[in-house]
Amino acid sequence: MPTQSTFPQISIEELVELVQTGHSVKTGIDIYTKSNMLLLEKDFLVDRTIILQNLKKKGIEHIPINYDNKGGIWKKNGEEIRIKKPAPEKKTKPAQKVSRRPEKEQAANRLHRNYSDIELRILEINNQKAIAGEKYQNAKDNIKKVIKNLQDSGGEIDFGTVQETVEDLFSFVTEQSSAFSYLTKEIFSYDDYLYNHSINVCAIGTAVARKFSEHFSSVVNSSLNSTPVADLNDTSNDTRQHYTCYYEDELYNISIGLFMHDLGKVMIDKEILNKKGKLSKEEFAEVKKHSAEKGGELLDKNNISNPFIRNITKYHHVKLFETETKCYPPEQDPLTIPPYVKICKLADIYDAMTSKRCYKEAFSPVGVVSDIFHKYAQQDRILQYILHAFVNSIGIYPPGSIVALISGQLVYILDSNGPTVLPITDASGMPLKYKADPLVLNSKSDDRELQMDRRRAPLSPREAYQIIPSYLRNNISAAQA
Ligand SMILES: [Fe+2]
Ligand SMILES: [Fe+2]
Image 1 (cartoon, rainbow, N blue to C red):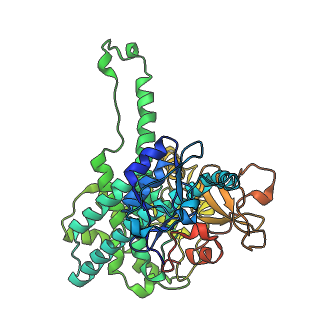
Image 2: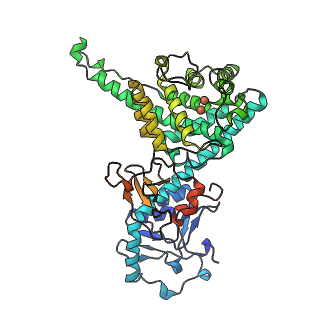
Image 3: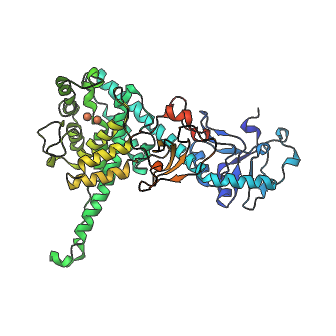
């Protein structure tokens, strides 16, 4: 079996230059990372530089071209460009096969090119997932370490590791607000709910807090600055005010608070936390201690005085309107609760409801968002701004997830907007034997069969792995599945 080094090689930089000027390339050989993750399929026609840039990010410096297996580099007009082979003795290809591709093959390639936009999108999604997956795993290793240390030391928080982890999550979520919507429902096991939950609430809450801050600031600014200067009895041009809801350092501390919000649970009996079925009155009283009481004690013990972190930890289960039940501490007036604490509460509910636990199945994200809206939207204006930010940041239909339509057909989400989906099974759930055309789903469509089934949660990776076509599998490892 020839290795990659047997074939002529071209550097990514050279290829980027060629592709930028309208050339295209097909490797004719699958490209893998050192850890055997498939990055580029042998038949994929690369005509966008983003693919090459993604390969470079994955550590690929040179691309081999297997001419014997339909690999090659072509100009816009179809003319082939040959690159040098590494050594004469390693020639693998007879001269007569080096000519321009025959008409028939070019036609087939054009068909392939038609589908390449979809495959490009899938490749992008898989790359995003891979990057997000690495960040997530790193954060998970760190929170495990923090919790173990907390247990072993009887209450000592490794705040340095917390800060380091949140810094990484914070900058990643800032670059891509719905980055973890790719993953939040994909990485899960029964034993490590608290680790996942801490990361999910931090990622979701941080994205929501930023969106809320931007939106709320712009609304206030437009209101402040629309006031005629003359009405303020001031003729200078300096009266324009600029309101910023949360500054960067405040958002960062909010992120830390979100990440640490449930650390008080480490001090609660695990059997109660994992109990299947309804908690007794006494057990619920015990669970309630994790926020204001145990969480507050941990912060005191570790001299953590930042008000954002303290308020989130202590009050993330308070009532958001006067008559809301099962909230604690009960005496807290909803009007005194800052928006970032409300954001934590909603992110907490969303993650808990959409996660699978030992005692319950995951609920559909769409259904959960709809329930949250019904419950909170009419309560007060600030909550409305928060909910607006919430819906715009969490990614209800994360690209790369697989959801069911009312018809029973399963579809792969290509783009959250619309959303645009790729059907992968028929209505009975049998995998399609052909590559279907993408569909844009419209919730207002009369065709009910083509609407999302809001009762069904997206498929778990294990379920998805059984049915998805091979070209969607690249990044779902057997371990995750
Ligand atoms: Fe909590
Ligand atoms: Fe929580």
